[in-house]
Image (cartoon, rainbow, N blue to C red; front, side, top):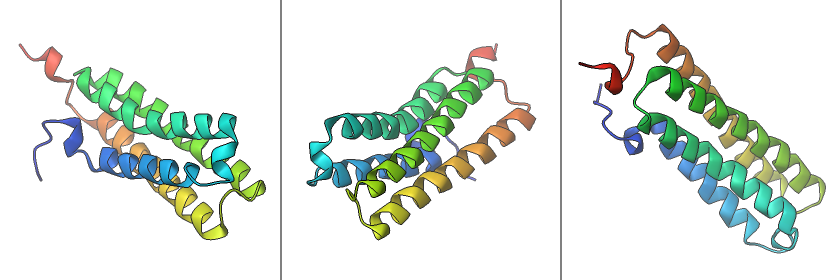
Length: 130
């Protein structure tokens, strides 16, 4: 197993970055791009997924990391909910919806697994090393 030294090394962060890229790509196209409120919300939610993974990692403590991973997981739920709003307004196709929703669901599962792993782990975090 490769040693994780930076949040950029985490597969879940890489997947979250891809989710954010997908969201920006979809929201740049009309008619989606014209719904400024939904565009802002789904972009913020998708960004929150990757940003909270990074912030939690950088805090150097297991409990804080778990808390931020939980926030990231909740943001995945927001993206999924907002994707329903987008398809209901015909802003995205069925294929785009399925890709977006599937990616967010997969990341949520990854985060859940990571949270459970950390909860069982003896690791406390870098800031607790003497």
